[in-house]
Length: 472
Ligand code: BG6
Image 1 (cartoon, protein in one colour):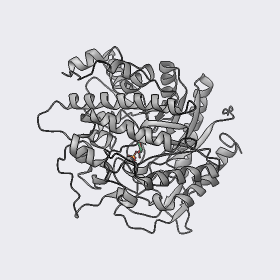
Image 2 (tube, rainbow, N blue to C red; image 1 turned 30 degrees about the horizontal axis):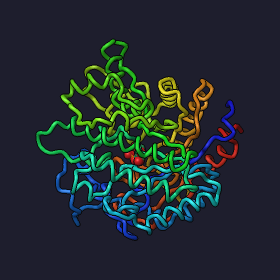
Image 3 (tube, helix red, strand yellow; image 1 turned 180 degrees about the horizontal axis):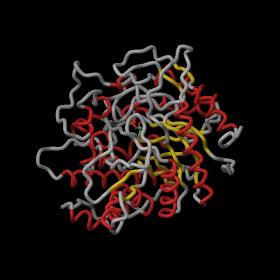
Image 4 (cartoon, rainbow, N blue to C red; image 1 turned 90 degrees about the vertical axis):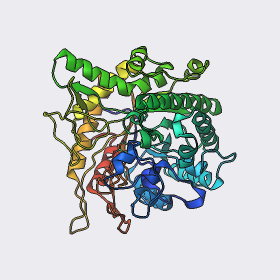
């Protein structure tokens, strides 16, 4: 294998809402994820179809305890340091800093917690990469102003972002504003706190919310650069290019449109303005965005790098009716590809394709901040987890990324989802495991929370030590 850059950032990721637990501790307010239960109804909640969001004693809410990272962060970070992580990606829970979202002053306990966490990373020379909003928003703002439906949300977010840039200045320099920003269209409640009313034009609600999110992201980017010019701000795309199902021009067009649906957000964040195709898109969807006079100017603060997640490529046709299992971004099955236990297509070459296309389009450094395999790991009679399938998945994707680098794509680093097992965002399960570290907990919330290093833990340690795949 050819070389990786010397300063390449290898690491792993988690998010606050899938790992911290302690959902009301030290003054934290209720977040959107805290009202999404595990079980059959979960998807309806995520889609914004459930108007009654009060907590019910008959439901199990996986985020309330998650893997208890809020309390175990020191020993967990130590394990990540043992793997040699150069970067650790996590998010800040907005509701630890502003529990309701609209307070005058931030919650000092929340600030203290994240300062300690980031200091702990630096103790091991690990650079934190921090997402301000990873499927997160204060429930109070959902209830009072309808979350990102309202333009007021922009001010609340900007205040929160500014507080973070100030309080964590010198501790964090790599920031992402919104995780998988395009997921707002596919999973509107978990993506943006949107709950729909009967009969309304959902497309309008989503794109109006998107406009507010994009304004907030742009303004936060500006403030981050003003507070410290060394700050590096990225956008974050749920990536994976669409392939046309056949070479019929209608299928090719359909794949192009599907890609645009996702890239729309990144087009704005990288170019500082709406793409030319958006006019027709809005017209056809009957959307008349409410904008203020100066909005075009407010969108002009562009990001420094383009980060993205990649699990799988996607497939589209002009007459899409079948859909692949369990993924919020709908795709046709691709008969040429193997699938994971959860039906996600496995396509390392698709990573090379996606990276080349993203770089061709934006000419900005890329950062792969999520890649990994959700699988049913088991602890064997010797207390070991032999996750060779995960090693194979990661190995093949690292090789594909290496090819992309040698195709000329500029890449800042590679971050595996996830550093440690945590709650699945889509299904709420613990059994959909991604980590290098096993956590003893099941889908009903039972288990000791004990941590076990998997086989992939030692494999990744070698990858980082060798700055690439270790060739025996
Ligand atoms: C991304 C998210 O969508 O993929 C993560 O940023 C998520 O939060 C990850 O966990 C894997 O998806 P899932 O649904 O299998 O947990």
